[in-house]
Amino acid sequence: HGSCFPSRGWPMAALLAVLAAVNLAGAVGQSVRVIYEDRMALPLGVVGADLLASTAFKESVVRQIAGAMVLAEGEVQPQDLTVIDAEVLEDPNARARQGTKAVRFTARLLPRSQAMEE
Image 1 (cartoon, rainbow, N blue to C red):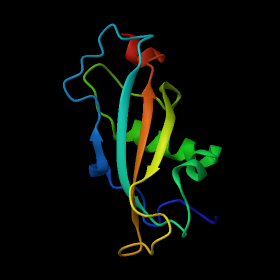
Image 2: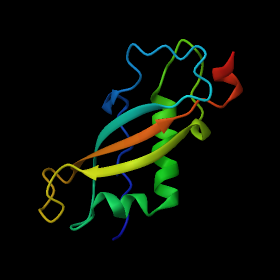
Image 3: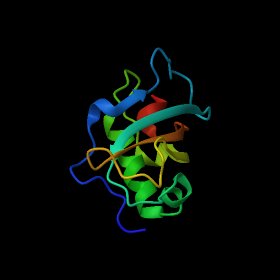
Image 4: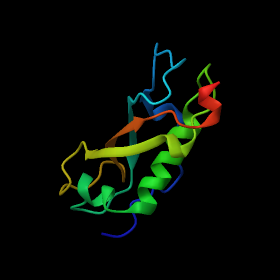
């Protein structure tokens, strides 16, 4: 389906529900759901399953989410996140408004790294 990567980078403000009011102290081994929404340039017909089929794309999303998260308990490392769902929030067969479409990613944060354990 062509390139699904954002054309101008990922806006940090797009991180919506990232562990607001969640205390991760002692959460090592327990997972937390993280939701990330963004606008992306997508070819016609691309759906969430197409985005999930690309390992490189999922790694890019994970790095973006990890980089955008700021927690009192420590840093979130990309290896602590797993993308579990992707949804194109606008009609995948319609032309993109202003060249982009809204996309929602759901990830699981499972603190495993040393930075989160301390």
